[in-house]
Image (cartoon, rainbow, N blue to C red; front, side):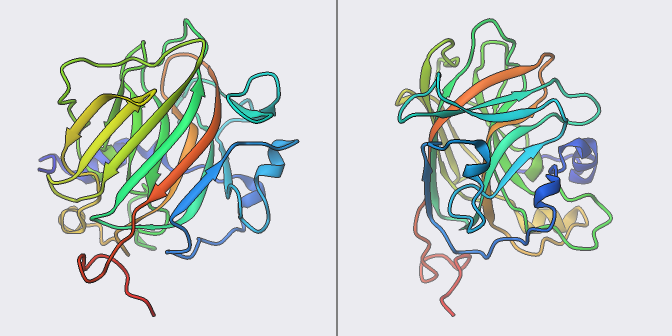
Length: 287
């Protein structure tokens, strides 16, 4: 069920979560829905700019909300291949601190299964409370002339404590964090590479599912809404233009911890299952 509090209050309360626009990308146009279902990248490149190709065959945007925040290709710390990406972000102020890379061009609908994974290296002895690592959201859903700032409805993989225990955060679809049905939590490893995987069934009701794995071992499992409910948004005075997820972000998607964060990312994989309009009316029909 959706939270009883007004989503308008929730959304206004997280105004700093608005997506940062990188100056060099300010003129880019929204991607065409349905152009891609799978994507992977091992970050093998000479420079970070090489990851942002004009033909959009690799990543489409880099987000940075402070001049101190950085992303660089490095060659002395990688999980596979020849290189990885090092992200650095200062702690948030009244503005949420971000340093991440984004891929858009998807058309994920209710009923689809989504799998995303990435290899991370996080140094020891850093407080990871309220650090966000992966976002899946919609860039093109918000009404054009809304009185409320665009919140890019979506869900996010958040670390809820100092040790880095992962949970699924749903504030941007007006819901509280999902609860872990597993008896034991699993904190993220430190000082070594590990694989972080997030598997989802997208639904706007309680039939949605979410599972988080560390090195192929489940550490979080839950059932509940994982997708925006357009009727609920209407009750809150927001008429979404569409209901889908069309992009994902990985890196430091928000550093709401109390300290600066540096981490490394390598070998990202993203898959969205097929969507049949005969089985699911939310799926687009071929033109």
